Length: 277
Image 1 (tube, rainbow, N blue to C red):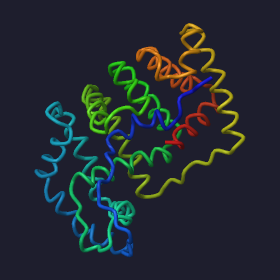
Image 2: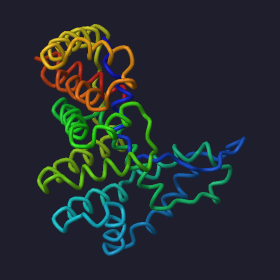
Image 3: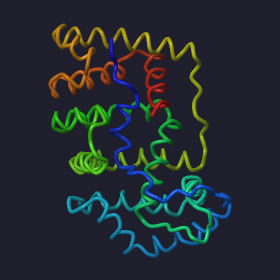
Image 4: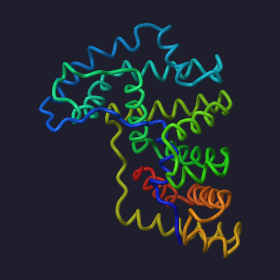
């Protein structure tokens, strides 16, 4: 039985992290402390006032951002940019690419990339209910986008710009209440990662095995009830070779199987999944 890897699904959630396109140097003697100090000096220029913050948020989300959704988006961005640990987090990303701290260049796009990475890494620190919401959101997004796009996301066969567009389209299509809840979840995750608290919940090897066994059993039941045996065999043999809608339907079904597990296997399985992102 092929259950798509956690990292394949993770591409859906890390779509907005476009990577750091910096010229890497052969040597990087600069310290993280020096970079942190320099970034701390530069960050205020990114958010000098609320008007500038609003322009940055509207540019990031595009014309579909309503006034109702603007407030939670601005709150999230403002809290992140002003977080005392953000310069240190960004410095860890930058250090391999700089010889001199004085040469460092920090723009709004890079800060956004750092915030998204902090959010994704922070999913590991969320409570079980928050991690379940991460998986539920992932399944909902896969169901909401075109099968061809869903299939490409699953296989990693899509440009980062294309993945960002799909994620943005999904977020902008949410109700204001759902949008605000999702932004709050992302804010909690990012703040947790920057603050390094609470600690990442430990799942023992025995719990990982038990959760995986329970998941495989539940996946098998849902697949038998929803799909033809021949289709399942073709998917297990090569997910890229099956029709996009079938591939996406099976992927969503597998995520729903995880969410439908009884406790404590649900928490163990979801925790293991999120930990692998």
